[in-house]
Image (cartoon, rainbow, N blue to C red):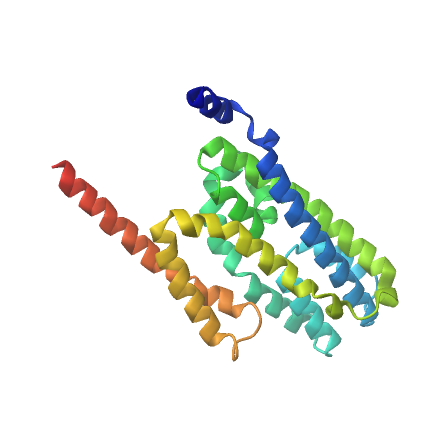
Length: 243
């Protein structure tokens, strides 16, 4: 009976996996709420409605968008806002390399997929154990989050200042809390991931008081060097035993 249950799980299409759909829905919900906050903050600060809406469609990067709008509202020019957004978004280059093979063949798939790469889509993708499910997880989470985020931004922008002070709702904690829930299974199961995550988290916390928002995430990527080294040592030990 156990064998039949495992066989059924393997043959169930990833896009029908209730656990995956539930988790994606929760993250989309959080993304929509933060999107409403972003749209409302931008318009309440004096920007026209089309600015956060177009930015969300073209840039599609929450932390970079918040930072760029913050620069604009503080009196900075478009160039300063763009540079700030680009700096904070450089981490997606590493994320793209991590999921590139799971996006699918063809230039169109790679072009659209690259636009959908976020912290959350990468987490969902790498949490799956076989290539078919990884690809499905990427597109389900990527398209779902893109649609919900942009819908939320539009709703928030139209609402404008009617929502009042959006910071009092604690919306800034929604994404981090969901991401922690997503990465915990990987931390429990993979010692190599723990070797990368713990020093990376320590570095990020150390520079947080002095670094601009988003930069600690880049610093945390230094932990990947330890993960790679650990894997190589593990492969070496495996080859020695086989001889």
